[in-house]
Image (cartoon, rainbow, N blue to C red; front, side):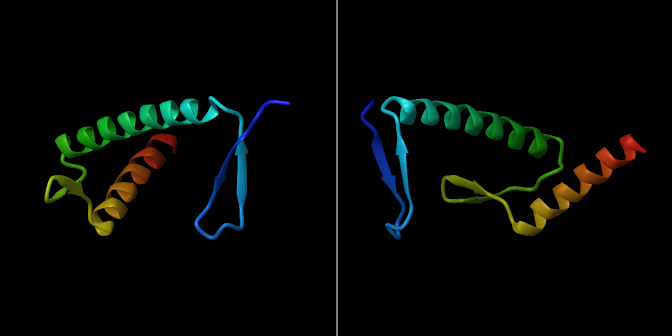
Length: 82
């Protein structure tokens, strides 16, 4: 049986065992997802659908802005379906 790496959450209650090398694959996939998410955010900002707020070096979004974006995208998608 292959050795496993153990990941324990902050409460030390739940344990997940991963096969060595699996962590690197997960990190790679999360990096791709993060890059796609960044591209999508930039697109929404350029199109004026999402208003960003700069805090220090980071770009943040108000919860109300995100909810408005979801409302707009949902209504646009629902209009296309009907």
